[in-house]
Length: 274
Image 1 (spheres, rainbow, N blue to C red):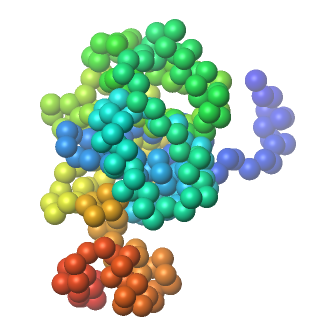
Image 2 (image 1 turned 180 degrees about the vertical axis):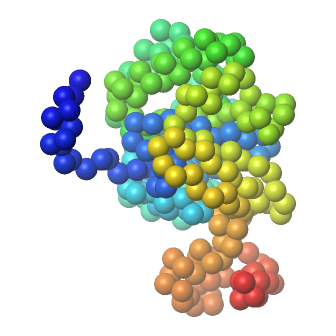
């Protein structure tokens, strides 16, 4: 409890956001929602690695490196190992210890025994950001039950309060995509921010946002680069040029853009026109 006097006299600065623009703040829950085959886990793994390294990507601004614990219950070890190796090709080795991943087959947040396992694991790892992908694999509550879902989120909030972490949840959309995540509407009342994936054309996805504690950013499109397994701004070549101060040697551009030369020239021409 704080007295009004204490609040009025407090001039401390709030913690820096983890992902800027209100997307993931300290001690909050971000939920990433999308339909099947919309590359939710690719995007989440990109975010996880970027947070661990402290690197911006695809327009997401990461303020500084954080220790990330990723619980991934789909895909298994080997397929995800190959994916992460590809994603990490251009990552500095400096902060690779910041990224920890586990592939639990059965661990339920709404069961005390499983909760204690997760709690002890996160405390041992000294995690700062925790990811559960997908949410449905980490509870056995009835998805359409407001009470059941509220209990799951109560456990997640308990982890946040006791360990000082922030949480990212990956969730599927329902049968009617425009209604958002599947299951009880209680989920909508529980998150602090939501990033919704909408399928688009040409390896692109459209992102829309919902925020509790910040101004809602405009929707935007990002493109999946199948050569690097990273999402980029829709004009990924612009992002690459901006990162080098707007000037880059042609040979270096071809090497870093990782596209065939005709494609690179085509994208440069399109960029010039815009």
